[in-house]
Length: 204
Image 1 (cartoon, rainbow, N blue to C red):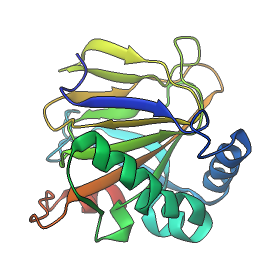
Image 2: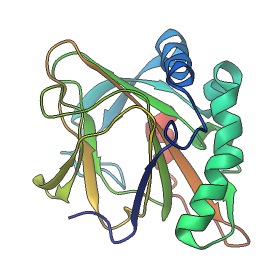
Image 3: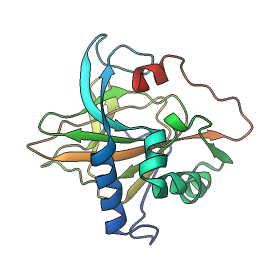
Image 4: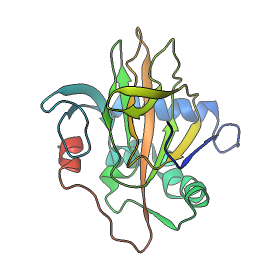
């Protein structure tokens, strides 16, 4: 099932971004993202210990440098939407590296691990389509038992609390690509809790 708190809109339909803006974000990611890997068995991962998934990553420093418009949206317009959704005063991550990232999956079989989130305020901007025929749908379930598979369109903006909702990205079909920008927010005035091994696992 979906997380208890789940909200979706589309920023192209809202007039915040255009299709051309989304393409600029995608192209900036494709040009500047680095090779990365997910190792199973970390504190938020549900994959087998020692397993490995290859993908490409543009971390928060890269987003700020190469896609500054996305960084500004994360800190301002998207944060304002998130505050209305969650009913809380929120701040961007104080660590720019893990604030707004872009994950890029490429080619048949590309996927993102089953995991839980470490904080209750997650945003996700979709930069490429995901469907049953393309793969790349956002999966929610538990222990690989898929209960929801969300098809998505470029410009979709999701907010959810997935600390207790296992989720993953479905394997891609054929030569398709999938790019999404996960965004971490935190409650203003509250202690930020993030597993000590998480940033090491994600960013090295």
